[in-house]
Amino acid sequence: MPYDLKGRNVLITGGSRGLGAVLTRTFAAQGCNIAINFQSSETAAKDLAQEIEEKYHVKATIIKADVGITTECERCVGDTVKAIGGLDILIGNAGYTKFTENWGDLDALSEEDWDKCFAVNVKSKLALMRAAGPIFRENPDGGVFLITSSIAGVSQGGSSMAYSVTKAAQLHLMKCLASVCGPKIRVNAVLPGLLLTDWGNQYGEERIASLKDRAALKKETDLQDCANVFVDLAKNTSITGAKIQVDAGLYIAAP
Image 1 (cartoon, helix red, strand yellow):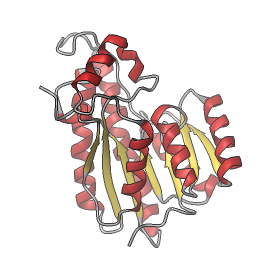
Image 2 (tube, one colour):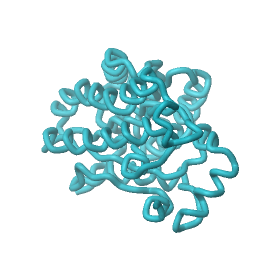
Image 3 (cartoon, one colour):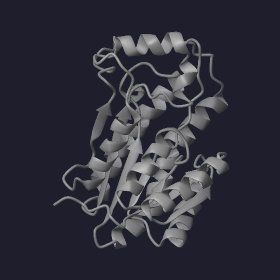
C-alpha cells in the first residue's frame, strides 16, 4: 500500500536552493510540512518557507545548520521535531564539491578539500540517520530516508575526484543503512545527472553542451523530473536499498 504523504513532516537538508528548493515545493504540494535546512542562504530559505505556507497551507520552518558537522546534524533533526511536530521523511540533499579543471590531477585538491567532501557527502548522512532513527522507529508508519547522490558515484567523472569517491561511499552507506534499518525505515538514493542549478552551471557553457550531447536523451536532467522520483520513492513501501538514476541517459553513455 502506498505511503500517504499528506500531513507528513519532512526535513530537507540544503532545501533552500537548487534541487533542494524544487524538492521543498514538490513535497509541500503533496501536503507535507517542511523543515528547510540551509547554511548561508537565509533570505532564500525564508522566502521559500513563506511561499509554501501561503500556496499549500502547510507548516514550514527554516533551520540554519552546517551538516558537515555531526552535532549540527543532530540539532537539525531535533529542531525539526520541535518546529513542525515530528519527522517522517528525511531528505539528505546537501552535498559538497570543489570543481577541478583536471579531474585526474591527484594534486588538485587539498587534504582539507577531501575531508570536507567526506564530511558532507558521507558522514552527515550517517549522523542524520543516527539522529532520526529513534524517531522513525517510534512512528506508527516508520520513516523514510532519501539521499541525493549522483551518477558521479557510479562512474569516474563529475566535478572532482573527491566528489566521485565520496558519492560512491555514500551509496554504499545507503545500502548498509537499508540492510540494518528495516523493517520500519526505508533508505534509498536518487542519482541525478547534469542539473543546471547554480552548482551545475559552474561547468561552463562548453562543458555543459558536451555533457548534453553525450547523454542518450541529448539533454540535461530536468529538476522537476528528478524531484518527482523522490516523491515516488517516499510513497513506495516496497523499495529500500535502491539507487535510481535520473540522468537523461548520461551514465549509460559514459566511457
